[in-house]
Length: 250
Image 1: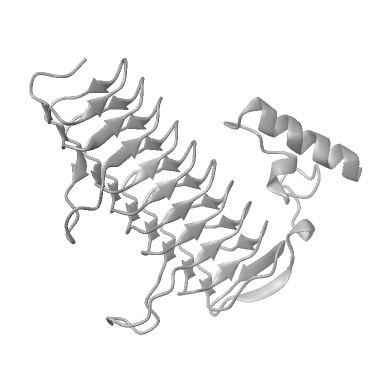
Image 2: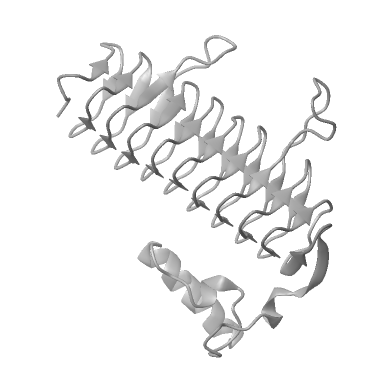
């Protein structure tokens, strides 16, 4: 299951059924869980600039698409999926079922919860935290340097569970976007966003509650999105969401 042109270090650990595509490099210390598929021209376990960052661990059933570079010193739960030409630096800790879109750039020391979804061309500054079930859409930037360029204090942004950040929004250093909130497209988020709120504009301001936004077909409120959007999530998770809203009478 290893293409003849791939370079796999003897000290890498590959689980049962792992596939490695043409011209891919797998460095020493990389651990690939059973059933993982790695496309062509990838580099897994790229050495970190600061020296030994530790092993790279990718959980079972993952899919790393072509031309992706994942540095040493990160851990991914089962079911990781990347798009093409993804870059992930050292120090990332990700739970199960992380989806990273094409041309995303994760700058390291980042924490990602279960079932996080990153669309294409997302940049996560070093030290970002994304809790479970967060959605981040194309060209979003999470920053971490209050006075760039500097070697001083850095603070990553935090997106709490179920938060949604729409296309081309920018979240400034240390800002916290509350649970279930929506950051509108092209917003510049300079201050913390409360839970279940809409933040829009430049500079971003709270414009009201997310529950006031209707679905396009008029069938009900668009948020919380888990009331009506279930595609791609495990059955047990979806059952829990359905039960949650049935209890609430929603």
